[in-house]
Length: 338
Ligand code: UD1
Image (cartoon, rainbow, N blue to C red):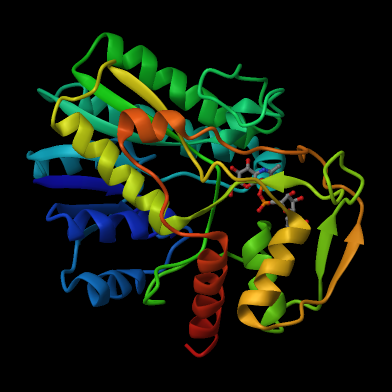
């Protein structure tokens, strides 16, 4: 069965391609290489023994999207990752985000709605909840006004899919990720941030390896036990597997609603200082860090209620924070030597 993975050379995309291939799916990747390296293809095939098909194209080019579906007429499912994801950049260049995350989605759905039956998995984010009032966060928690154009594109994306599913054969699962971290245990694939990492774990590993002088902890005056902000860090391989389970559910017609929403996290919140300490302990490294002011737009805490993912989807995470931080460090050391 042929599955299209857009953004399949990216961080979460590449790990999902591996898990899809492990389950016997044939994968076609569409990627424009804007934030990914073609070498990732080798990383994937070193793990699975199988090279996925790659079509280098930009989903913002409507004609190219149309040509893709003329060539690949037998796509059974789509996992859509291709999008821009840097919050700060989205504030500086909102139209880039609306074009890349919304236009591309629209063009893709325009082709998909012509097909007989389509299973669509969408990369959404816990950012849609903003600062939720109740922890852990359930899927029915109110959606709050987005704090950035990036966050807004995830909200709008969810709404577009809901609307289109009502008038087409498209059925979808919206996966709201919490904070994906780590790398494949083989260290063949992992996260490759462009420039200075904005996210915590890549900044930690780059500091540990000496690429950054020290880590800044953004705020220790949050109303949390140690004063630093709390997030739900999920191993990227667990997250990747959630996509395969969600896709299989749609392919097996087990979905109850046309569009279903699931939180994908561990259900456990960890503070920034806890992440630092855990990284230091499991990898036996001292991490230079200093406390600085809060980062604008950051929330105090977000961690998932994963009951629905477990009870309805039948998915649960297997890796611990320790294992995720071990794999992130192994990956950082591997890319240093490349
Ligand atoms: C961020 C985005 C979120 C997006 C996600 C994608 C914001 C406000 N949110 O989530 O919308 O879906 O990335 O991966 O940008 N931290 C430090 N020092 C650092 C980096 C981070 O202390 O150098 C802290 C942050 O303040 C935060 C925690 O670490 O409390 C996690 O930060 P990060 O990895 O950037 O993720 P989010 O901000 O949760």
